[in-house]
Image (cartoon, helix red, strand yellow):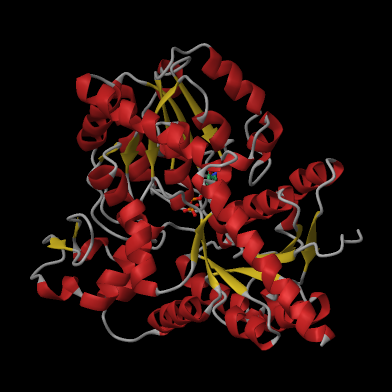
Length: 491
Ligand code: UDP
């Protein structure tokens, strides 16, 4: 497709993990709707996850395309076909996956030389992208897939190391220097921070922080009304230009876009919608723990018992486990559970059309692992949350949901893990959090606060809204930059 004169061409380079690819693809589509030529750099086995959506956008006349590069699975020592974080079958494979990610540097440099785009939006896991782009005079925008709040918490912990001042892993400490009093425990921090000594991951995190500081600026999947004090705090601390462009999930307007987001759903979206249509408003709890985390069978059993005891309607997404196929349901479901729950609960094995489900008026609660996308999707749908963080920066996001926004109730998750939960949360604690969230006066107040945020999120992305205007400002700045480059070249 020939580009229009003076049209911006932006290269989007997402990390090969659903929680990063999904918002980056949404972002590319959003930018394309604002007249940008958008190229998404992907790999052969990741592109089918969003190919259909991009084709639909192209048919509508948007200048958007996918450019595939080879993923160096074999070269790094990964099994053939392992191109996405969700295809790792054991946590031990993670360092090798990161090695493969590092090997994408040269292919990216080649692409930048060939395309010479006006701008590169690259994920945080590619710290070398800043220098690669800078060498060619291309501004690199940094995208970390989370929000300002978790970034501020991360920065404070790194700077002040408050976890070193407590005697035990479960003793709470206050995260210093933040606009609110946020408490965490050492057990809720990533192991690479807890251990304290320099290791491969702390080195990578340092490179990532440095690449953010050296980048042209930061684009954030957030909106200013969600965490105003934290975007301000962050601007002061990191001294980088920042733009809010979210919530990005709102760029999925029609049912097909929502249903196909990130994958082809394992459950027919019409079946989900028909099931939900029979339920009263706010009467269903939706349960999903993101795109890659697997609970052990013992934990699934506790969840099942809590759901039954709570008496609530539910849609429960259980990821297909790689090692033990989900077929062995007797391992994680109480005897006769499915029969007793007929009409009351729907179990989805695999991938669910999450945004479509959350947006349904029957859904009145979301039990979530607090991944940033899920957090924002819950906010955008106006659905209060039962928070159950597991790893990554999810414990920070939980604090935003429960302590700052006050739109959620925690199950009492205590321990950070990469993908293997060790401490089992008991049925009684899960049931208590579900009941508190779904029934009673307190539940009503929490829901009302969530509905207010939903409206703010929508307004932010509409013409004249805060995120809409931030994106306008960013595109204007990039156009001015492009014009001055062209003028310099002509002199
Ligand atoms: N998601 C989905 N269906 C599923 C599981 C996940 O659509 O069955 C989407 C979800 O809507 C979100 C993303 O996958 O956009 C997960 O990102 P998040 O940051 O919440 O968690 P992660 O998977 O990165 O831990």
